[in-house]
Image (cartoon, rainbow, N blue to C red; front, side, top):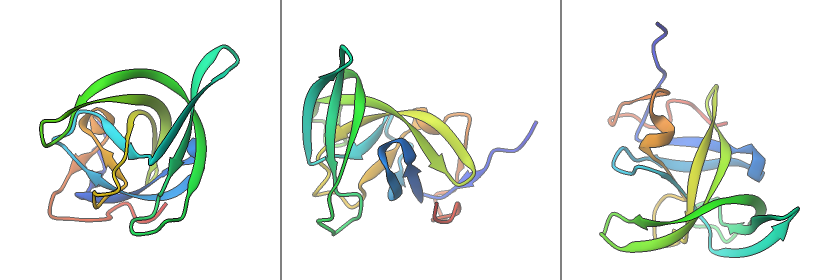
Length: 142
């Protein structure tokens, strides 16, 4: 059995299907699902399916905008770390973390007031990584 790669408490990831080459993510074993910062969302229909136009600030402390599109998987209630319940859109996209690529569900919410533009949650990490909370950026930059 091959050992799982070790990641730190924060890592550089990429979301190629969304056109995001580098995004700093907090590795959050307390969060069930992963989350991506989106400051504006616009639902639309494409080929009979529900899609979203998503506006992201992928770089912390920068107003650089990135606009992408993804199919809506569902909408669900998510409880944040402060105990507040928010209905969020859910998308699925490929995540690249070092040499590992995998599909992950991401909930979308405005994280302007948060330090990280993305959280990598337990569902995405399960069976793929071991977390060393004393380390950072073990996977390098994508």
